[in-house]
Image 1 (cartoon, helix red, strand yellow):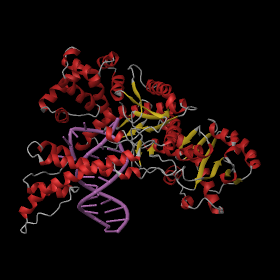
Image 2 (image 1 turned 180 degrees about the vertical axis):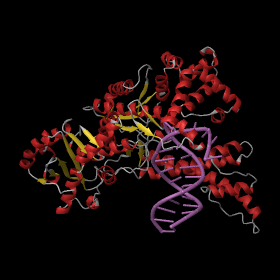
Image 3 (image 1 turned 45 degrees about the horizontal axis):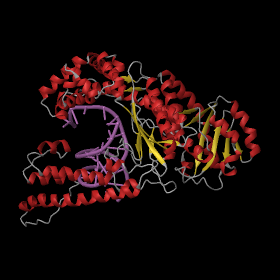
Length: 586
DNA sequence: TAGAATCGCCAC
DNA sequence: AAACGTGGCGATTCTA
């Protein structure tokens, strides 16, 4: 690639004179260089804006935030289209340091992910994407160089090249997305970027004192259980030892050592997973202790001190990383730390609080995946269940057992619930049986009853599985594509292919809906002291100033419902929302 | 001895 | 390869 012409911009005049040409372009490449990865502790050094003629490199160290209003206008407008690779990163720095809400984005990173259609072998850094679509290699050596001092010619060339390459990359990716009918989904994704960037910037508040107290309690309980287990398991070991060394300790965190220790007590197991130990616990009470220990160990390791290390020194809050396309179905995933797998118990969730003078709004979709299924399947019975506004599982029980709502027992409801949750994942009779604690025969009969009551659902699920086998791919309501790399002739993969064929369109459409809602909500909160702070597949947590909590709650519900209505035709959608002091649904 | 693989379990 | 889909992640154990 030829070296682009560089226009280095360090004065107000230079900036003013470069804006009109940029504004006249239909698309520009955008990239930034920063002194680190965290906008709260790092600075924005360069902003590169590329046209086919030249790359403007704006040295942000030469400007105060108030001096760049024309730039703000350019980047906030929907035109020209701004091409960036992982625009979330640039959007965060531009928002935090210059107050810019980046708009009109085409993100080559997200585009590449969509075009890969779930192929997890593909890499999506700028270098591999350029290699795949432009057959070029990029020199990324300068990326981690020191961007805080005098800049070398080499650094400027690197900065310019990264922005310039985005223009041809955009052309290729746009063409590819068009060929694959992915432009609608791409726009949905691009519209969502800013809401996720702002959520990461806002971060979530964790009461560290309360969290430490929780850890301490867990640690105490853990110690006691561990001692009891060492006693019980060690006794078995000493009988085996010629030297009778009963002080010998086993590592309770080692599945292999635990399995061997159990064997010495006459409990033979292939592995020591929860479900297996659970089955034998009635016969061997020590297994309950072991499971209790596992639970406490899990909590200490995954939800202990390590979470506190993520509290940002600059903000005192946790700014997790959210991957916008985290799964082939389009779900967002969270890491560092994962805020999507905090135990759903009051001890842990109550530590995620609203700071003084603020409130949290906790809002989630009610049975969104079942509603999507009802809508896709045009199943009149299931639609009627939702139309009635009654508790879904009780209504399902009433419909499948042919009894009035008033006669539905807790056991009936439990069985119906097991089916409602299980079937969108393609569950079979054995799975249902163990879930609701029944025999396989009973489970089979229940499944028959269920599909009799919901014949449309049965048909749709069957057809979805067939489509997965025949076409090897599926699409969501927005058109998001997942090409299954599973072999229908492989006996193992055949079953898996059918299950994923049933689940992917539903889970994926839920993602479409959720992203619509996030984008729309973030816009609606503009100008209010309210920010999205967490996003958990079908649940949003918003933090706001307490006096506007009621107003914000209504906006949240409205935007979430409207997001769903964009993709669903017939089924009603409900969102449950609470104003709270902690991450609890009261 | 660092990274990969495995086991196991948390969320929706 | 647990019944049932999608992930992240920590501790142990294996391997080059």
